[in-house]
Image (cartoon, rainbow, N blue to C red):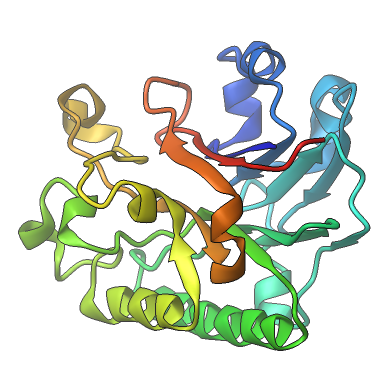
Length: 256
């Protein structure tokens, strides 16, 4: 099984950059998109319901903002769009799909750079989701959590760690939350497989950063530890253009 996750930074913009051709060529079993920034009714049919896929969209109430989409060749047993907290649900940040092997979270985590208020929102979202996952774990569910976390975990995960340690995205409090999250039995699949590899998933549009590979690794596939034996590979498609993020891939030892 091959799952791809990508923050596309606007689905309408990336459709003009060859997205459908890329999607058809890659043909993942599951595709997770974040920051779609569009209402479904604004989109062409070819992306709203791609042939061969079950498609699920969760749009933000605010136009041109946030939003996630999940495309799956396998019909999920259940699909959930709301986590039960109004301030989070209205921003269209989560789609949960349940399968026989695991429960999959497609999440666009908040960005805390705009203001202290948004940083506090981001931290509330982090804490709420961790509690949500732990309750599912208590019920015996195996979890995959994918998407744009909007935080780099360790100095290896961004080009200029010292210069960014006072900015949201690499603040001690954000990084400590990742430590706490992982301590509850979750695994960063890429770092588990490649403890010393430098690979980024996001580059600012400024300063010719992508050409210089001045980036951050802020997109992740996490799994609960009882799934790690199914993980075959986890990596970034860092040559794929079209967004300020690149796609990331999780390959699982599950034959469909």
